[in-house]
Image (cartoon, rainbow, N blue to C red; front, side, top):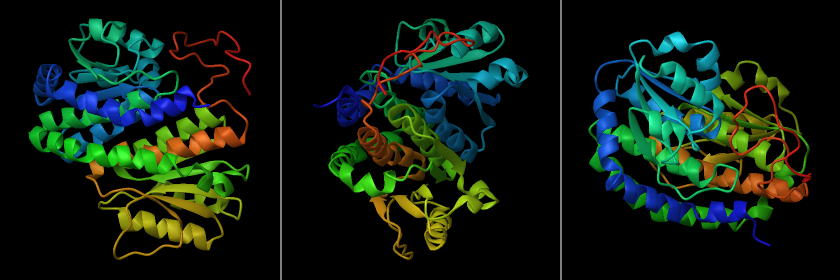
Length: 356
């Protein structure tokens, strides 16, 4: 029987088409207004939590590449320890629901102190109603796990970056051109779930290693493995992994390495080759490099701009998390403890279901 999670994964192509249509039409004025503020020369603070925060990371990289003073800080840390960072800045708050407790409290703390740009998928949420500028993602809704809303937020922030850096027409054209390839990637990777079985059936944590904008894919991928498959996973910058953590590699090691076309592709492919040589099993997620061969199996993806690579990279990990849940006898997309929207910082209300 097809689960809601599977339906959400397969519906991403339609969802992204709806997001692009919205952001080029009814949503365009909000993007332009937000971009005008973000070009003002003030420092830019980007915050969110969970999947929303990870979807925000490529925006920080895009703005840094455009020589903007931009920082991404997780909402819980910003709320309790780093609120002074908002002084004289423009704050971009990203939240799927617009109601998460940290976002609600940041709204209260920041209102009147700084300009707030809210990015959410719920136009009637606290974030949408109280932000100075509200950007509606326009994604199809997910049941619990952020699937369509995650990729929809990635696309929305990619288009926002285009408005900020005066590449909006190019970004829109690139997105429109690549949407059919995205739908094909979903069909392809979801049609090969059993190819993950030997890789996943080992009982070891999976390490997800990346550089640049693809760090979003590593962190969101680890979150999916935690939420969907109830399985431990470690997301880490590839350079940091080389400085000591590589010592964990043995025949039980499992790693996902993101290798988008870009400035560090060869470095990441070289790491994959070394980890395989050390006895670990690695899956490479990205397009092959014409001048670099590796014995590690590829989760092959098309060549896309590095800033848009996370949109594609998460698809194989969605498939892997779904298959791992099936192998563990877990109903994919069910939560045991966490609610869909966290509204209490201190307590969980209790067991949410009797699922494994």
